[in-house]
Image 1: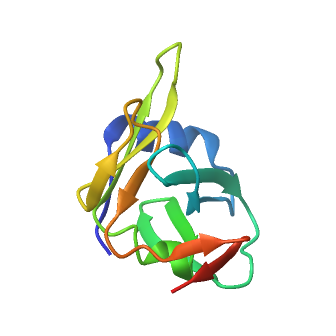
Image 2: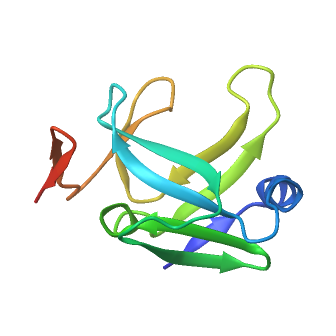
Length: 118
């Protein structure tokens, strides 16, 4: 899996991640384009999750459905006053919304009632 963590994101994550912690990244239904990235620092993996990328001390973990759509993901960080934080872009994105917070990917299964339907 090809995931790129830009320098500013790596610096921020190295400062925030404690011993045994990782960045959980999942793709969820939402936003005006259909899908959004969700990320959180965690220390315990959930059922169905695995490590999808390691860069030094930074581990990225995702569930099996989301992991299929993280290839070519670029993780960056912005300290902008408005909309600051981690930023995710992906070369596989088919469309994005005007504000850039949501996207759609070709082949992403439809999510209905919290369940993934292929």
